[in-house]
Every structure is written in structure tokens, then in C-alpha cells.
Length: 162
Image 1 (cartoon, rainbow, N blue to C red):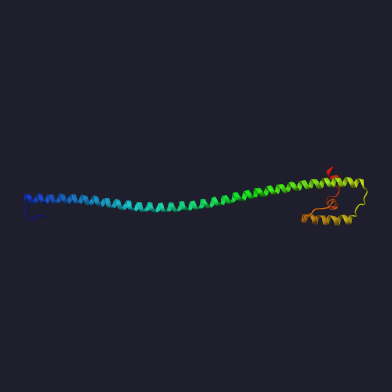
Image 2: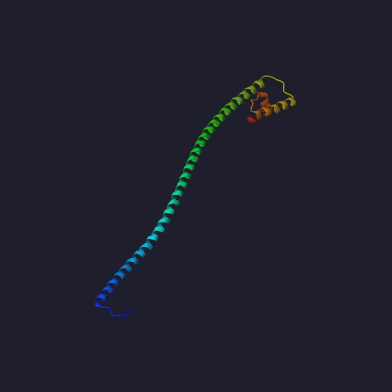
């Protein structure tokens, strides 16, 4: 509200003051807008930094897990190699047993041929049963058998082999 008239110079000063105030207001609005934008970007940056730390932690965890699995895989490969060596050893043992069985079979055949040529007394049924039990016990213990024990266990081998 104006109570007295303003002269031309006062009017120009007032207009100049209003222009500066409008300019200042525009600058303040612009500054405030930029401040709001800067705050929003700062919060977004903080959020992204937080996510970055989470990703780094997860990456570190995955590296640890990968290293653990790599170690476990190396251990499993070592176990596999050991098992392969053990299997080879068992295969060699089996081959030795097969060879020994062939020797025993040949020995049995030779003995059968000799016993057919040489008359010899047959054992009584009780004695054969006693020898068979002793042979079964030896087999369970992994001990070698003598010819009579094998014969008591398996009976007449000629009728089986043909």
C-alpha cells in the first residue's frame, strides 16, 4: 500500500530492487532445486555404495566357497588316484589267486591220476565229515587246504568237470 506518490527516480530504484529480488529469488530457487537434486543424488550414491559393499562381500564369499570346492576336488582326485592304485593291487591279487587256483587244480588232477593208478583205502564217512569241517574252518581263516580237505569239501571232482 502506497501512502504517498513515488517520484520517477524512486520508482526506478524500486523496479531495480524488484528485479534484483526476482533475480535473487530465481537464483535461490535454482540453488534450492540443485540442493534437492544433490541430496537425492547423494542418497542414491550412498545406496549404490552400500550395494557395492554387499556385492564385494558376496564376491568374497563366493571366492572362499570356490577355493573350498577346489580344495575338496583336489582331495577327491587324490582319493580317486589312491582307489585306482588299490584296485590295481586287488586285480593283481586276484590274478595271483587265479594262478594259484590253476596250480591247485592241476595238482588235484595229477593227484587224481595217481590215486586211480595206486590202490588206496577210502576214508570212512565220519573221517570225511571231520576233515570237511576242518577244511571249512581253514577256508574261513584263509589258510591253505591239503588235498584231502579239498576232496572232503568238494567231493568227486571228476563228475563235475566232465
